[in-house]
Length: 325
Ligand code: HEM
Ligand SMILES: *[C@@H]1O[C@H](CO)[C@@H](O)[C@H](O)[C@H]1NC(C)=O
Ligand SMILES: *[C@@H]1O[C@H](CO)[C@@H](O)[C@H](O)[C@H]1NC(C)=O
Image 1 (tube, rainbow, N blue to C red):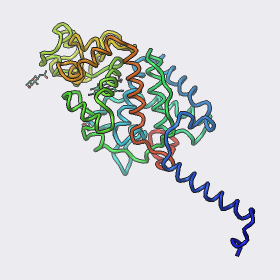
Image 2 (tube, rainbow, N blue to C red; image 1 turned 45 degrees about the vertical axis):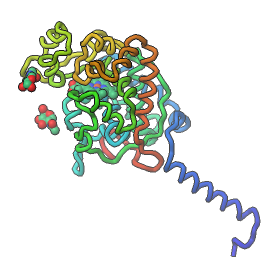
Image 3 (cartoon, rainbow, N blue to C red; image 1 turned 180 degrees about the vertical axis):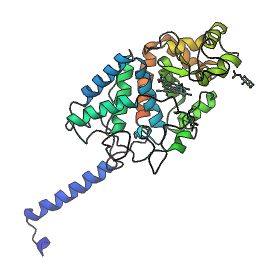
Image 4 (cartoon, rainbow, N blue to C red; image 1 turned 90 degrees about the vertical axis):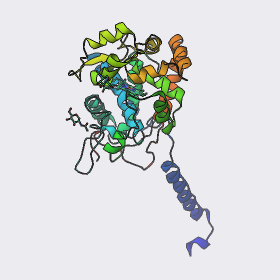
């Protein structure tokens, strides 16, 4: 038998087999890493940055839309690109679930970026990672902080209408304790929740999401309520838009928190963060200190990007982002 001859010639293959086994094992429990594509797609970061930049030059709001898309992706079964999938014959996807229906946008930008990336490094980069990077670049291009993004997420082969509809993405009618609970379920703290809500320093919301607040609530500045009522009637105009931060909606800053101090939060779920409860002091802190907000926002974005990724040999690398291979 070959194995009875203990020459180095035979030991070497055995060592190789063992090493390979460990490599395979470790990749199936792989962690995300900032250098994941450094060898396989060195142009990745610049292709994404320029794709996001040109989209924002055309329309500043798209930066907000991309940021929100990443949030809604991560909360439903982890950051796996599932929100990008259209409905198929075998599953109903997430795009028409109540938190997303008629309000998520940015799919064309992701599609365009993905096709540019396929030209420089085909079959290598996941849609989940593209979306994570696009969210980071959006924040930075609109005047916010930047940070290193851990990569190596893989794409899901399916999406879940029912998970996206389950309330895991909290509705704008949420109480403070519901918001805290919803974030806790995915491993994010109350502090993370307050910092991430600062994303509402950019972008728009539809009348239907804040109508009750501007007509029925008492913890709202009267002139602010009147201003919003002008383009959001008691009935009709459900899709009419208003800025989430009425002062600087195209700029990523801490004005969102200053608005809350003045009872000028647009959504019910915004104002509950400063309404006599446990998060008042954080809102005050972020309103006074832009640097603290940036630091805590970045920390929380990295945590959100870590929610339940598919890694190693799980899932797949989609060829196009809106359907499984
Ligand atoms: C804390 C719980 C949250 C609630 C209840 C909430 C709710 C909402 C609602 C109702 C809208 C308007 C959607 C529409 O018009 O249909 C919105 C927009 C937005 N949300 Fe949130 N959100 C929350 C947290 C977050 C987080 C964590 C992020 C990102 C880190 C985020 C980013 C955004 C952005 C950027 C927009 C504007 C999107 C655009 O203009 O296209 N939100 N949010
Ligand atoms: C999504 O919006 C469309 C158009 O308003 C509506 O017909 C449909 O019922 C909505 N779907 C869900 C699941 O709410
Ligand atoms: C105000 O509250 C009442 C009672 O809950 C409700 O019936 C009505 O639809 C609300 N008005 C608006 C504009 O949301």
